[in-house]
Amino acid sequence: MSTRESTRTRLLDAIDEVVFAAGDATAPVDRILERAGVSPATLYRAYASKDELVAAALDRRHREWLEVWDAAVARADTDRARLLAVFDALEDFRARASGARWCAFLGTAAGYADPPPTLAEALRQESGALRARLRELAEPVAGPGAAALAEALVLVYSGDLAMRLRPDGPEPVPGLARQVAALLVEHAEHAEHLR
Image (cartoon, rainbow, N blue to C red; front, top):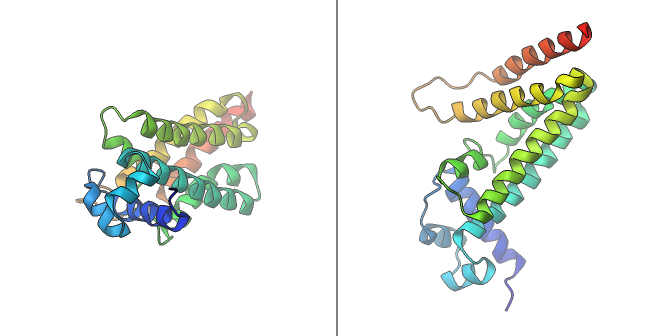
């Protein structure tokens, strides 16, 4: 017997709320089931394990993130702005009702010393897509330095997400990560211009 799409959606929504938004990677299955309003049998009919459910929720979240990022890139009118659009997309994504206090992917990775294969694959897909897209967007700006610039931007991007977890620090300054990234892009543009 297959599981209805509405039931799968409720399970994915429960992961979004309990695990990603609340930042509780170790949430017991019972809490997820209670939030989704389904029985254990229903969960395991839809997904073989909690890890598979989390991986499915990560896949859905990744697709949603890419849509937000694509929209930010589409609004940009220069190569530089298209590259920096990842930071605009972060702000747009955070403003959504399903936005989390930080990155669901970083939170999931931090919750496992050695993630099971299903989760490891979801994490690899997100990291690979982030790097590949940034490298592609960096090529018109940095030429042969695109890969290095993309890695530097991944560091700023990840740092911006991680800073949101610090309970003792001030609220993140809106746009600060984008400003730091813009300095890196400016440096790379200058280096490419001198070649």
